[in-house]
Image (cartoon, rainbow, N blue to C red; front, side, top):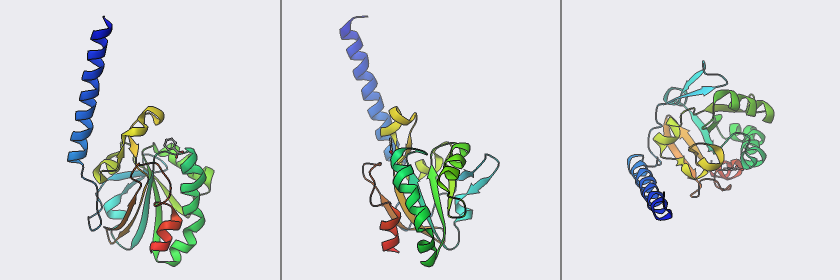
Length: 188
Ligand code: BEZ
């Protein structure tokens, strides 16, 4: 095949990807404050332990934070440890549970939680197929070449009686700051 032909094919592919992403973002509007939390089954520790988001967070105040991936440097050194360290402060402010969500399988989330000492402080919830992430409109396609598939933007939310009360999303999806426990703790 000629170089010109290969170039044309590459351009067509890029245009198609562009269409795919713009169609995706048009359908999956980003969640906003005041919305009800989508009802999706997440998995805690193993595929037999379903946690339905609408049921689990239907009453009281809960924190859900999303990360691009288990064991990645930013998530392991800063994001998750912050919530583990600050859990008693969050509890003192009326938070019933802190929950870490990632598009990973439940076994990986379990191993990451054990590695970080999350038990009793942060629940490790696997958004196995990314359905929760996608219904919130928080997909992060930009990291798929590094992490293997579309992941979740870095975000933190406060859910109160099943509704999103606060939502902090990193616009670039990966940077740390507004979704850290320290930021959210100050806003409670
Ligand atoms: C991180 O260190 O958190 C990270 C690394 C690669 C992709 C996304 C996040």
